[in-house]
Length: 91
Image (cartoon, rainbow, N blue to C red):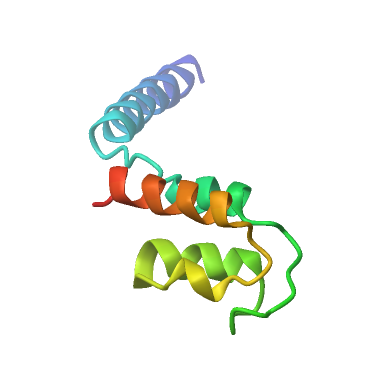
């Protein structure tokens, strides 16, 4: 019984070590550009841009190269901030 317990403990420790190393080696950093752009948009979810809402517009701006001028409720200074952000954080 003690031998089985020690074997299970060893197997658990090895699996934990492997998972810990794999977690560090294969870590993928999250792209926060969509969330940052979404925070700058007005948040009305009006659909005036032709997208389903501000979340879809932010995704289109970052990933599809959509035009910020399609967002009618945004003020000109906000549109300029978004353009500057996209230019500075392009991938």
